[in-house]
Amino acid sequence: MTEPPSGGLQDALSRLSAAALALVRTRAEIAALDFDEAGRRAKSRVALLVVALLCFAVGILAATAFVIVIFWDSNRLAAIGAVTIGYLLGGALALWRFNVRQSTDPKPFAATIAELERDVQWLSRHRGEPE
Image (cartoon, rainbow, N blue to C red):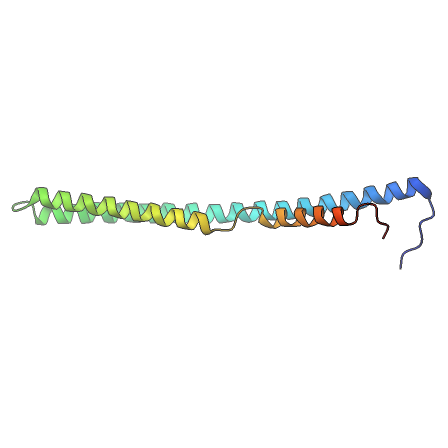
């Protein structure tokens, strides 16, 4: 249980500033955690993307050479055209999936923004009211 205030205005201002600093510190810690989490997610995505791109690049080169060699004597232009269309379709599909994932992932700092919004609502409800 807390003691009733006894120091007057200076004591009240001191308690208010201490509470405000604690609030700012808590929100800064939440923001730091959000920032760290967003950084880890971004690093993980980049690493997976690089590995996938390298593997697909080697596979695509091998598949292209294979298809063109098979059809070199009979339909080399049709084979090159079909492979090109396949690449374009694959690229379009990959970009579409990237955009879908980008729009469905949680927004960075969502927890921090929500906490700050709750603080603003609380302060607006309790403005001028003693506790």
